[in-house]
Each structure stands twice: as structure tokens, then as C-alpha cells.
Image 1 (spheres, one colour):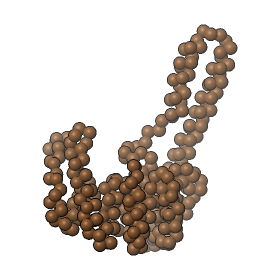
Image 2 (cartoon, rainbow, N blue to C red):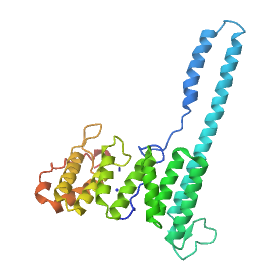
Image 3 (cartoon, rainbow, N blue to C red):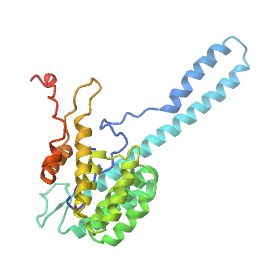
Image 4 (cartoon, one colour):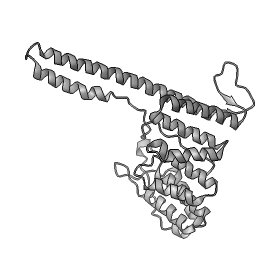
Length: 285
């Protein structure tokens, strides 16, 4: 997860596909690559004889097959994402003894155990049916749901997933670090956070990971390490610029890190650069 302790409350759901936050635009890459060569080939072959039609016919068949494959893949992907979304809704359903109003499609559960068991079943069904990246994400969500009712089993599932590449593996490693911290295994948690920080693209914001690592150092009574980690986090963020060279507004994680640094070491906090004023002209201010 901004790129975020309370037990697992900030486990980010891995972004579906686009890390920018924008809705994905589905492009038929095969057809885009195929159409231009076909047009160029048509120009080159123009007027060269009827036999050439056999070649063109074969290429058309290939294009049709490709179109069918891409259409099927789009449909399967949409179906997989919908199934995963449905399972996520189940995992976030309200816990209440009050039944939803008549005609409502809202799911509710009486206990966390009932909700977790229901969501795990749905996530596993998605993983078995679709596999691939969506299946990996479903297994990640199933593991985090299992943590709430069987911590040892959930940790085991996260450990297995954390060894895989891709978004689900990275998110599993972060969730595993949080679980290990909750279990008092601070050395293991710190090592996992460091592994994430060493990754070129850890999916989650490195600010979030660094803040968590600083919290581990504090629990280990390694005050200097915690202070230095927080200082580096805030200093780097305060020096960040956007594409136009203007200062970037600090995230909530950066603000919390600054406050924590001031609490742990007021003198070190004074070494931080003074935040540059933000340009609010785009907001009419």
C-alpha cells in the first residue's frame, strides 16, 4: 500500500492493474501491431496478380483468430475482475445482528469468523477458476482474511505468496511483515521491510514502508535508527518536485513521520529543511 499500526487495517488492496489510479484502457495490442503490416503488405502486393489473394486470405484468417482470442481474453479478464471485486465486497461486509432491509442486496454477517470464512471461500473460488494475476491477488486476499480467524495458517499462506513475483507477492510480503510485527518478531518484520525498500517498484509507496520500519526500530528500542529513518523519509519528501519543478504536497504519511520525529528527537527535527510554500494557483487561491 501511497503509496500505510493497527492490525492489518491498512493492508492495501493491490491496484487492479494501473498504478497511476486511472481506469485501465483496454487496447488490442495484437491487432494494433498486425493492422499496420497488413496495410503495408497490401500496398506492396497491389497489382501483382490473383495468386497473391491466397496470401492475403491466410493473413485475414490469422487476424480473425487473433480477434477472437483477444475478445475472449477481454471477456475472461472482465469476468475475473468482477468475481474478485465481489469477493472483496464480501470481505468488507458489515458485522451486525440487524438484517438488511427487505429488497437490499447488501451482505451482512453476525461475526468476523462468518465473514472471513465466506470471503475465503469466494477468493479461493476465483483463484481456482481464473488463475494468473487475478488468481494470485485472490490468494493474497484469502490469506489476509484467514489471518483474522487462524493467524498461523494465514501467515503460512502469506509466506508462500511472498516468494512469488508480481503485485500479489509484494503485497503479501508487506502483510507478512505486519503480521510478524504483531507477533513480536521484529527482526523478521524489519528484514521484510528492508527487502521491500530495496525493490525498484514495491507497489506501495516507499514512504509507507519506511514509516513502518521506523515503527519497528522504535519497538526494538533502536531510537537512533528510528530517528534516522524518519528524518530521511521527511527530508526526501520535502525535496520532491513535480514535473514543473514545483514542491509536492506532503502525504499524510510524511506528516505523521514529521510529527513522530519531532516527538522522538526535537533537535534532529530542526535539521529538516523548511517546507516550501505550495503553489495553490491551480485551485484558484
